[in-house]
Length: 335
Image: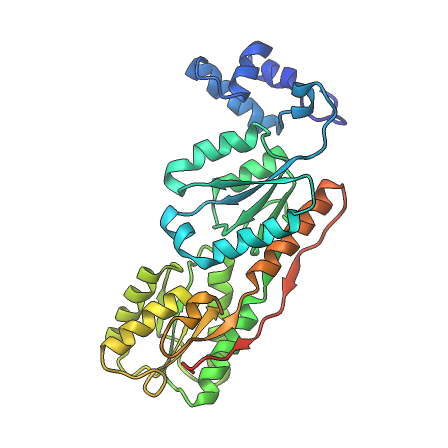
């Protein structure tokens, strides 16, 4: 096989030791293929980096017609967190007026990975926007192997080839939030982090830690959350039990912060008089609490628009670079 051309279905069939027709049936997810042949063809596809050629299948020269938004998260998080609806609005608004259709590729990590992998390998979409990526997600290796044009929303924690991405300056956001608490006079400041297998969780925590260390304050009051209301409530209960003297909390998302505030108030403490609180996102959830949350802005729709623009440029064959957007504190009444 020439190194100057992409692998073909014939190459896949030869590597797998099956006929071209069998290889084609595997690519098209035909259930009549025996399992041993399916495994051989799937292995050959992965080894060769084969990407099905939809133009050849349709016998016409075609332009890109769809991009997939890939969200590999539990259903309850996707439909409960306003981050994701804001992301989809941003992608949709940028695709308006183009011939491209947005396709949603949603799935539970434990349940749907194989189905999502088959979809990506079968060449049903021309490019991918990955939202909410976690370290070790096997679908990232599929994107590398298939060479699908891909842009991440959020800095990916991946090994190997670098992917372009759009992110907010999460570390600076953590610093901004924690500085507000320090300047308010808080001296026992805790944090509820995001998931530690995501760049957003790591970077926001490091901003909190940097600021407290610089102020000579302790950095031991830490609980890990998962960006959900339930996770925020459980983490806040653990913090209150372990550190009853805390007087400030930086919470790495508004959903978790709203739940954390309810836990604080349930103990009879006042927010912000007894415990000051800063969230992250400045989402719709921040306006629903009493008092409204003080929160760090996360420009979700703008990130989605920028990520979609980068993907459009990749589809045109252009080179792109990662983009990191600035953030700021949005005033509320909790800090």
